Image (cartoon, rainbow, N blue to C red; front, top):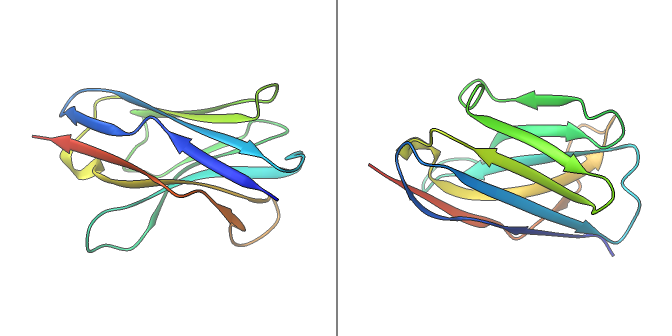
Length: 119
């Protein structure tokens, strides 16, 4: 059974940093893409960033480019999202997700971790 467990959320002032981690288990993730999404109160869930497990190919939403960095540790089966220069609009619940690279939608989801950025 695939499990994705996020950690590292919290409260931070604008301009600060947080580091989110996603511990993945339950299968081999070769050929998978791992993504981070977020959902702000009253808004739809939106894509933040993704990375392919094999090649480490990354993608970012325009709103986080230059501020967020995604990485993966194959040996530990973890995906990390380093978030710098945080803004109040980055506030939301952040979710880790996984899918086969060629799939259209993400199959597996974590429970989410809250990130709150105060102004």
